[in-house]
Amino acid sequence: MKLSSYFKSIIDQDRSAVVICDLQHTIIYMNPAAIARYSQSGGAQLVGKSLLDCHNAKSGELINQVISWFEKSKDNNIIYTFRNEKENKDVYMVALRDDDGALIGYYEKHEYRSAETMKLYDFE
Image 1 (cartoon, helix red, strand yellow):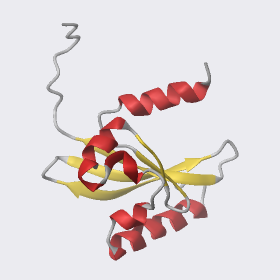
Image 2 (image 1 turned 90 degrees about the vertical axis):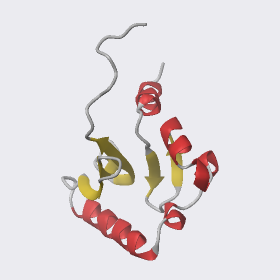
Image 3 (image 1 turned 120 degrees about the horizontal axis):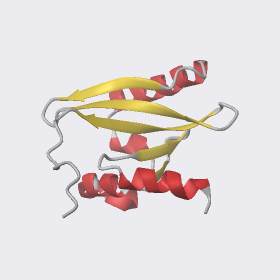
Image 4 (image 1 turned 135 degrees about the horizontal axis):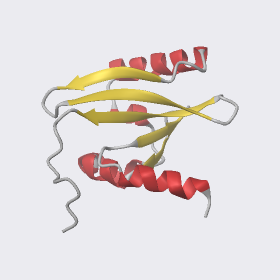
């Protein structure tokens, strides 16, 4: 089995939405949580479309500023972009790089701050 299968499985099992884009802002992958979260906007049909079409002009400008910042240094890999109080989460943009460190894309990372409600080791 290829290592990429493991990485895809990690992303697919994440309960948070993961939308992966290339440097032209084309949505190249959405995990199942993202498809469900953005179902009102087209869900899986968004793959192949521009992420910028899903944002207003100001957000698009900020996204492009983040990409420029990512390109300035291989050390510029994550930036805090938004706090959603209603959902008690922080949102980040994360750089995606190839084996040589070249920027190849980005994704949005959601980190929920609510305490887990799942029981510990609940095998039932």
